[in-house]
Image 1 (cartoon, one colour):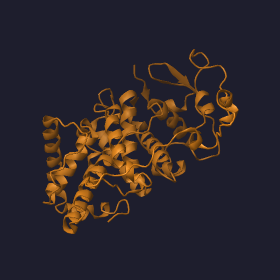
Image 2: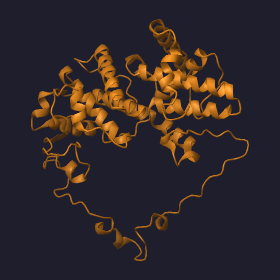
Image 3: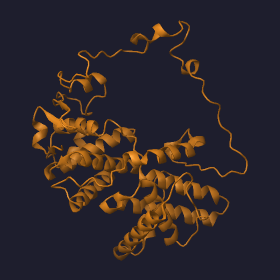
Image 4: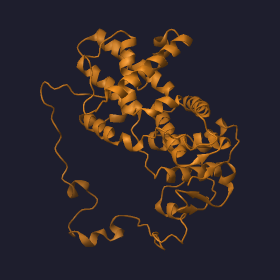
Length: 365
């Protein structure tokens, strides 16, 4: 059973999530502009005492030593030294003659040797976070309304100068909330900025403050409403924000192809321009509900292939490792991407010039 989420319900002391199992109260007001606190004690305060699975008293230890953990281990064990507890694996050495993908953006700083493992892990998780039909149970949110919301949220994201993946994660969170809760139109802007706040806390070094987001809504909503909806969003997503995004797959595919042609400067330049075109196209496809039906890795691959074809270059007939591709789904997705590019070129004939700002999106030329 879904519950309609609107702006008025956020002012009430109670709300309902997940088939009436969880009920709670709005968070206490405060002067801080940081949204909700992350302590476990604050999380459990919203659960009613009538729920049988919740302990009556929740105690939070100030440290691992205070939790009683030392009673079950050797007294000589140094709990402040992780290397004393865990045998860390030795650093892997690459085999000679094997092409290694090296993503040079900030996301992989210090983890360059594990880029392929990170990619395969994300590939194994994408089905868990993919919501292809999030509008099926939405009486007030149509594909057109969602398009306007994402278009507006993209402009907010650009004005705040946030990293691109924050936008993709925010849209994923919005779709996951729409998949489990009914949302009224008057609450969509609030939902958008709240999901952007949650995604920023996950990705950004310095996430925007609540008053900055409220200014984008012309102060239609209050700080307390954002805090309360932030709790609802986190509970609706089970506090699970590690969703792999389509942009992450595109970056891996492009980096893999660039590593294979590193010796050819002309080809490297063309592939970097194809990556810039792909980044631009992917950001635009966020607004199109039809592209939500495809898995992120499949959509990223089709956008990459279409971008390479558009620039009349060659990617070595690249096939992503570890990825299972159904030809029927691939052909359908690729056809949709080509149609999208053709429609885009009618309003903007020179796509390459428009995508110049995406070339150094991560400080890499």
